[in-house]
Every structure is written in structure tokens, then in C-alpha cells.
Length: 297
Image (cartoon, rainbow, N blue to C red):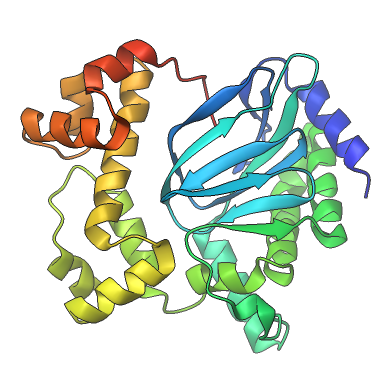
């Protein structure tokens, strides 16, 4: 596996900063040539692999800095802050954003477990919350290169894209992030299902009792397990998801009132108060100060 070859493939196909589609559902390339401080973002289930430069994500105050030695694995929707603090025109950042398909990841996790092929317990069983940085091992790099090579031929891309994406998923589940990802995609993960349900319905009322009921747990057990999985309480998580989504919308040009309604706030004063508490300025001041680059990952 040649990381130089991967970098060359990405550089050749990214003509501007931001995200670039590849023709393979779930895979996008990205480039950054300017330093961008960490700003609110929402990571849907994905992995982010950097082949040139350094990227950064912050979850609940914990900072994750990664490059071409480690990739980021985020198996559940998470409210983060993300940026490219060291990107520059003469030192561009190149990377790949891969969406993790829950159905395929779950199928693979179950197949591997039934075949006895999941990583053994040990150090990898340490408690990890929210997101994880995993070693960019040869199997992962080879699978990523084979996936990127499809872009040269649209027929190959159409016929083999899903197969090679599955191969990359397999490499992730066999690698350092394997047990961590299995916790989200393995059969019966009630916390992951609860997060997916809430993330898809941010504009709807949310109650912890309802979330716990959907997970089949008592309120106390759900609260404990949710915090173990995400670092946040359920209420804190929902609030962070709503405010991060609103901040992204406002930075992209949506009005403050429309952004607040989109993420479930019915009280403008409550929205402004919680937004200021989270970001240190009012929603209107935030919108005037921010210029969110297209397709930040």
C-alpha cells in the first residue's frame, strides 16, 4: 500500500476545497488549503482518513488530532467541533470521508462473530467513548487504495464500488477500531439505535423516558449506559446535537429563527440563551462572524 499513491489519486480528483463526490455512494474526498479553527459540526456514522496534513475534532472537551498514521472512527452520530488548523496552500490537507452503512456494518459484524473472526478481548476492550482514533494499518490502507482506484473507470465504479466498500468495512472491523465499532453495529445495541432515532428527529419533542423505553431500559440504566457510550448525558447530547445543527445552518446562511425551528426549539429566547451559553455569542453574532466552508468534514 502506497500512501503517496492514495494522496495522488485524491489530489487529482479534488479541484477545490471542500467535499468532492466520487460516484461511490458513501465515499467523498476532501481538500483544505486554509487553516480553519474548530467549528460546530455533526459527524454521522463515518470514518475520516487523512493522507496529507492534520485534522482535528473535539468531542465534549476532548481533542482528537489525527493524520496519515491514524484515522477517526465515529460509529454513532456525534456533535463535535472540527477543523483543519494547520492546512495551508503550500501544505494542503487531503482526505476521505466514508459513511458507515449501518445495515452492512451490522451484517459484517454478525458474520465475523459467527465465524469466530472478531478481534479478541484485551487492551482493545478499554472503555472508549463517542469516537476513536485507530491505527492506519496495511489492511485498511490496501482496501482504501483499491476503493479509490475504481474512480478511473465508471463501469468498474458502478459494478465494484459496493464490494470494495464492504472490503474496507471489513478492514475497519478487523483493525484497532473493530471492537469499538462492533459496540455500535453489533446486534442489540440499544444506545446506537436510540441515537439514530433522536438524530433523525431533532425537530420533535424528546423525553428521556421515551428514549429509555425505546431502548428497553429503566431511566437510570439508560442514563448510565448512554453516558458510557457518548461521554454525555442524554439531555446534554440532545442539546448539543440541536445547537450544533443550528450553528451549521446559521453559518451557511439560514436565518436564526428558521434554524431554531428546524432543530426543535419553540422558544426564541431559550434558543438564544442556550446558544450563547454554548458558543459565547448570540446566534446573530455567530452568523455574522462565521463563514462555514462548503462541505466541512
